[in-house]
Amino acid sequence: MELAYIPSPSTGVLQLGPLPLRGYALCIILGVFVAVWYGNKRWIARGGKAGTVADIAVWAVPFGLVGGRLYHVITDYQLYFSDGENWVDAFKIWQGGLGIWGAIALGAVGAWIGCRRRGIPLPAWADAMAPAIVIAQAIGRWGNWFNQELYGKPTDLPWALKISEGANREAGLYHPTFLYESLWCIGVALLVVWADRRFKLGHGRAFALYVAAYCAGRAWIEYMRVDEAHEVLGLRLNVWTSIVVFVLAVVYIVVSARVRPGREEIVEPERGTSGTAGGSSADKAPKADKAVKTDKADTAQAVQTESAKNGKNATNATNATNTDGADSAVDAEGSDGSDPSEAPGSVQSAAAGTDGAVADAGSTKKG
Image (cartoon, rainbow, N blue to C red; front, side, top):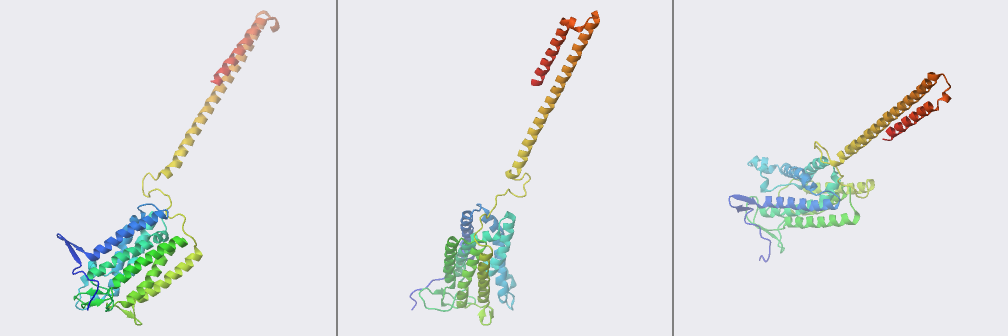
């Protein structure tokens, strides 16, 4: 007797008038929005700017979707390219089928492009996004529930998932592996957040911890699934992928901690918007200072030039006065043939004229 179980939706499509809203696509979109929102909060807490996560997600999300679909189609090519199958179905992403390994790999390429355009290090951005990404995975896994796919072996546990009869599936009660993985992803997010605060993880180590922890859970969850998959040495391909990626992530954590300990102090340097004609205000400031210094130098040079001119005029005036005084004395002597000392009035007049010229010259220079 079935006392308890998790029911499956009767359909994976909700009709909003003429528009079909597919549950799988809704879960993926909701996961992306939550990841961008939470990732933005973590990025700001690390010293980044608001909006940077969304700008980079514009590159990372499309690349990730393409990568996830490519991985699924390549590893399950028989579903689309074998006899009796329609290869066009490979493009019907809304029917399910996204490989997380391809999504992360190609999504990282898109994120690298976005980070390079913003001038920020990819490892720092990945550390901020690590728990946000795995939360998005937890939400996205519920898309498998809408499509009644990727369930586990038969079970009579109270939380068994009830699957209805359909194409390539038999009705019955099965392990809800989508739920197991969703809960595991939430646990991984909590682990990464705790470890990041406790050990100040940086230089990509928080992201590597997320990858390693997720792989550890994915290996045993994958082992429970009963859907068709390629096997190597008795193990499903995704199990081998989990093992290899887990080892690589652990090695990265160990080597990175020795080579680059600690956390980045600056994750997003202050810089102007690239590509603008005028440049940033910081770029313009040195030019303004240079212009002010040039104006001051020109003013000082003008004052010195004017002073030199005035000094030269004063000297000329003095020389002219001395010459006039001497000529007056000679004239006075020549007029009566007597000694200049005998003409005190003329000498005094000449001296007075000289003093007056000097005074005038000094007055001009002062002005």
